[in-house]
Length: 210
Image (cartoon, rainbow, N blue to C red; front, side, top):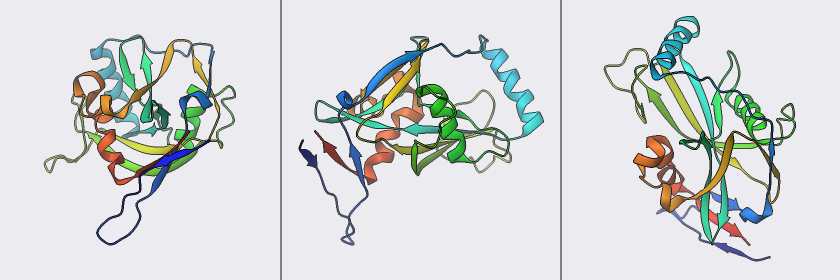
């Protein structure tokens, strides 16, 4: 096994953080029973968000950025829902739940055989935060100066993968490895959050293990 690394240093001669990336072929992919999705219209979803906001306040979501190697290039793991739209693995926190506990729970629910084993996900840096100013608007990587109460905050966390592991995915979801060069600024296909991930990763260097 060899490796290929690109080391980046800043003007202060400090080595940037390195992300270890392993080949896609090192991982096993299986399936499990489908998970339930709400079959609702956009109007239904907006109404549900309004009701939840009235009851619980700010909605906080956590999502995982996980990388693998394919064709000597970093690929981002994405879930495809209903063969239609893409999302980063993760989801909404429960009341009082920490970011790390919530993300580990969501990853186990979506990608593990045993949903109760949550401590095998290595959650690293928070890469960025996105905000929803209203129930019907897109997420933005900043808070509007005129905004008093945001409706949702989505946090992206780097999740470091080991050299091998099993991904067990619900049958109604697809787990895809998409090259970073395809994701970059591709708002039309992946939306603003996912298409902005390559920029968030620019402060890291990659050590690609073969």
